[in-house]
Length: 398
Image (cartoon, rainbow, N blue to C red; front, side):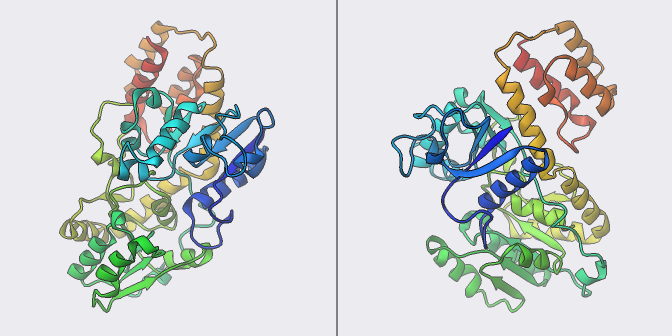
């Protein structure tokens, strides 16, 4: 296949320093190529209808606008899939430009992906039908635990926060938790103009002598920082990935995580997105320094098990696996309008025995229904069999 990754145009790909979306786009390129596909990274106005088998958009605005041509991908009749990365639709509401652009991008797409169900909830029903759940992947070969575990320990745990120093990340709560436990903490991430006041108030004027602030780092520096710390604290209340890229990279490096579960804020529970409240190696917290401190102590008391679980979870979510899932979803949506065998008897038989099937048996039976993208996401376990079958029943209309 010929695949075009649409460059948002904000900074270089791969990023020289900070840039989660740019890193994600780069990983899509690398891993689609590993699967034997040709991948180009182009600006939106360089992509014309019919030139590529799959066009992957990452910024909603470019579905309706172009920096150099009249109209975005929709107006120029370029079919595309869309992955939503920004949190502005949630933070600023339905009247914001970000929401309007993202809504338009979802409606115009073949399908769109989000990694957090709260972002599915905020859009109208005609958007929800096109939204697919997809976690971020992680480069598990690059982000890996240090060869010598002792190099991570100096007799005491060290906490880490990674991300922009802005209010939604709530790193000030992580700092307060570190004070409660008398533990060193490092906060890594840029300080943009709009959040300098926040960073000055909570971090630069904190007076905590065990706080280290790093404004920027490249990928190699971040790997080194991971391997010098033991626990990631990520109490953010708004991310498009649950877990987000910063969490996935830390877990891949063997760092257990104390963080908020984005989907706890969702108003809906009986829907097409799984509950990720029990991620191995990830301990949920609420937005409270005291609760964060308690959860950190839980990890410390059983650290070897949590660090093992974190790494194992990451290994089940490599970028290659994510790319394979996107291709499965793509093939499904391309053929969705074709007549399929809606064998309700077979479906009821699978559902009745779901709790007793192993993963291989489940996948073999679901393939018979002609919906291969409804295979179990890697690492979820048998407990989600019934959930996935109910989702499939809804799509099949049986």
